[in-house]
Length: 500
Image (tube, rainbow, N blue to C red):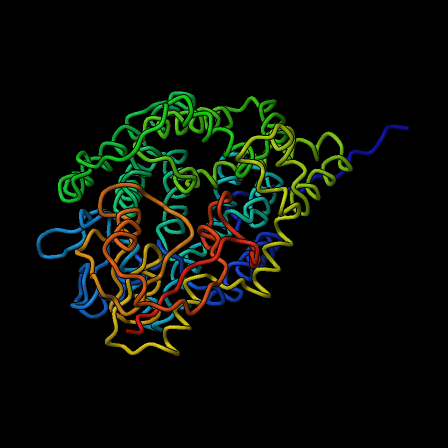
């Protein structure tokens, strides 16, 4: 007797929106993205976005000062003589302003970004359905993205991440459906969201495009995106930006390992290599091209790699669908391991003592750690200090902080100076906030502030009032820094109050 074949889900790419599984996954993503959105305080980078958004609400444009405080993390290089922001594109600041217009709070600052992030799930699903004409790949791609703690953490930030992920999906849809106008406008919009990420992403698309057929429409779309970006290249002085630079090989290896650990687990990537379709080859080539571009970049930060979240989800979907077709039991085991453990992420790189993978030593089940953070958010050091200052300081007093100055500005509205601002420093501030770490040794940044405190201020006039634990950047979504819970064993912070 012939063995009956297991019925496969029928696929109708045109009717993708009728799949109830898609909307169940999207609802889960919405819950994970929106739950307790204001429970954890803004960290330094988010506070930059929120403060510029607040100034847009008051002045109509991203002015780097409100008349009391200065917003800067580049020692004053981020704005012009009129304090108009020139360091990075403005899209994220206007999104933050829209949220702050509704509620001048942590929740308001993050809400527009989290709402946009929800759209990434159905867009990734749509991309998979249109490219692969497979409901299994589409469902698993959407599920992989929803279960990615690192996607959720970045997408909830009051930063450029969520709009960039949406635009990345639209760019890929435009590439595969040969829509030059959509490619031009989405590419330009990505440039005005984060020009550095946009340049790397669009170059990676161009490099990989021969694998799916380089054509006039694709060339026209990329050319259109470049043409629309020219004013921004000039205004933001893109070619004049510089920063620290490690060895290109070191940076390439770092980004590639991070992709294979945090975005698309290496075991599933290896499975996906068995897929010979041009689209899959395109995504592999695009990933390698992106890592090469980032290797020669002046800054090395995990956040830049995250623009590949939709690509990683598609490759993961391809791998899981392949396993499911070969053996359903093996397929469901792989799905369970991906969603509920870190086993696939750690194999084998996580067991090779690589620095990038050590994060799983403290968070063996990232999704449970993330759920714990939503239920009981850890207290940010800046939040603890802000609460203390609101209770014990007066609005006219001056705070000198070695780092975290922007978060203190947002939550206290006091005069907060120091950090990375590069502004003249006071010799007799009312409060001194000394952090346990140094983020930059560049002139005008936090090392300069610490040296000023040690050499130019009479500490005997101050009293130590509190010493809360001070981990380094626990609110950052970067896996190498993020803390899902309080870290009481961290080095203490110094809080000094002038008493005589």
